[in-house]
Structures are given as C-alpha cells and as structure tokens.
Length: 320
Image 1: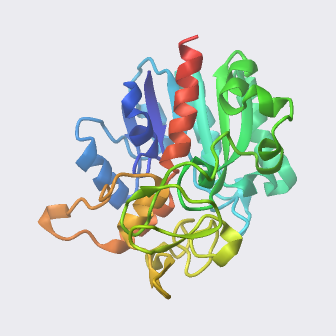
Image 2: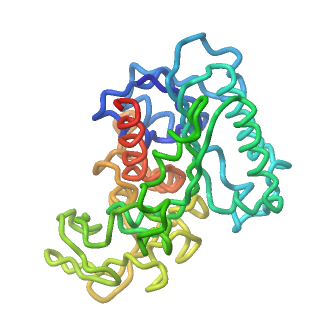
C-alpha cells in the first residue's frame, strides 16, 4: 500500500504502519519542528509542505490518503468557528486531494467536537462530499485508553472506501458491536481491547498489567491513571496545564510520583501516544532538543496504537 499523509505532524501513521510494509509517497507538513522530525526519521520521503498547493504535486497512483486536519476550529475548548475558520476548511482541501488522486481508502481524524460543530452541518458537509466523490464511509469515536496507552483520548475516525461502504464499516466495527452484543461496545464505543491488556509505565517503561483506575507501577512505584475522572492528570482536555490536546502544550502534564506531582517528561508523553522512546529527541545541529516543541508535536499527533489497529484492519480487508 502506498499512501499520502497530510497534516502529517510527526507521522503516527507511518510509525503505526511500517511493519506491514506500507510506504508513504510523501508527507505534507508546514510546521518547522515536526518537519525536522520527519526529515530525521524519513530522509528519503519528500515533505511537500502546504497541502493547499496539492495541484502542484506530482501525478502518482495512491492507495490511501490519511490525515487529521486541524482540530482547533471544531474543539469544544476553542471558538467553534468550524468551516468559517481557514483551518476548518482544510477538511475540504483533504477531500479535494482525495478527488484528485482517487485512492481506494481514506482515513481522517478529528476531535469529537466536529460532530456538533455548526449543529452537525460541518461534519455532514464532509460526509456528504465524501459520498459525492464515490466513497462509502463509516465513522466512529475511538478512545486511546482502550489500546494500551495511559490516557483518555477520544477522537473521531472516518474511514472511506471507494465504491463500497461495507468495507469501510468492516474496518471500524466488529460484527458483535454492530449487533450490540458487547456491553463495552455499547457503552464506550471502544474496540475489543481492555484495561487488562499489557501497558507500559510512564515512569520507567516496564510493561505490566494494570487492573484499571489508579494503579502504582510494581517496578518504580509511579502512580498512573487510566481513568480521566480519577485525577485529571493524563486525560484528554486542558487539565493541569494542557499538553496532550495541543493547548498550552509547552507546559506538559503532571504525573503523581511517589506522593508529589511533577510534570510529565517528553519521553513519557511519547509513551502516552505510543511512540518509541526519544522519537522526538532529534538533537538538531547536535544541540539538545527543546522540550516545548516536543510537547506540542506530541499533543497534536494521533495515538500510534489506534492508527495501528485501523491500518491492520484495512490490511485485512485488502487481503480478503
């Protein structure tokens, strides 16, 4: 599978999909630090910059288009300007790129606020235009905490397949959840991945099995939270100085560690999003990488395990 990634950030998609042999044709990212991360890890993949200049991009056969266009215009924490905001209009640019390259698959991500933006009209516009392009589609809210990372991070994912909604639906929904048989599916809109699954400690990196709620790592004693309402330190939202939602990201989050609060390190934020340790520590020009740009880039990224799950389910559909 060959794909184009737009609003690429630090490329959660490529980290998630490389094990399947999928290859990026090019990226599209305008921010300086994420662009430097891409150049560091993927020096042979072009970064074509501004996605609004897609008409200048080369003609090439593409299998999939992926991107999470800016969420600030749809976030409940923002001004909710929706498609009146130029950043919101990038969702329409995303569709125009799909119209030019006609990939079999599209994967689009945004905050849950997009569902109610403009009283639902903004999201309806996106889905309607996707249908006019010939794509069958399905959408679902997925929460990263059910994929083995220690944060509550709910995001809307739209999967489209050219000509057939059933294949898109088969990616995002299990048959059991469609029939409404699983309580977890009914209540949480989550895939069949539970809190009993192995996760990685934010403090020391050891893999272990939490029982849910507030737990201490058996190795280092760091207090972790898998439930956002428990202490509000690692959840989705602007608690304790923001961080993982792109708002006031330079301040980081707080982690309770042996009885006192402290700020999460960039490495811990990488673990929250499912990236390898020190993925964003690129040491530009041999100097230490500043923490601020790392926090912001990680906060604006998708969660790697969620993207891996989606990619593997698309791969299964391709191999049927």
